Length: 203
Image (cartoon, rainbow, N blue to C red):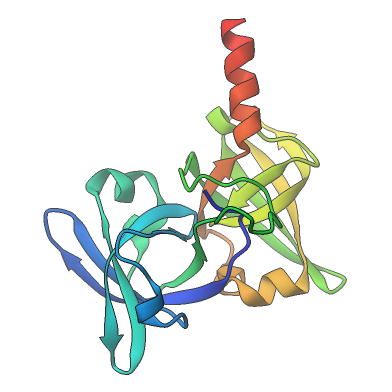
């Protein structure tokens, strides 16, 4: 489990196709502090550290991404130099600064607009129709692993558009500053919304 509070932005430094795809991600965190088998949220996807080391003087950890994971997330677009939001798993007693994030991507959205708004940025994201019912104004959503509050929801014929206000701190400490119109992002809706919808469906 995670909180959606990004701890650092890593960088993809190696990709090796195997039975699965081995991906090495450089990070600031010392390699020796990353346990093999640890869960790390990478752009909203819960992945397992399978190796650590140093490459070119930079610490890195490696993960294996299955074909299924790559096909249903933005990992299929990752290449050398891709910036990745990183968060280690939540420990008992840690501060819950965002909201409960499982690292299980529900779908892929697309950024439609980025507009400066004061010192912040107003970002509009197209959400697949099947996920729109789980998103509500003032509710929470994880965007590439970032816990954000939904400001607005506009239902449309084929999908929905959600409005998000990104404060300067979040803009500078995540990979959102590198995003642009058309960028695909991993989406995870609020866990409570999914359970409520399920209870209503079977109730």
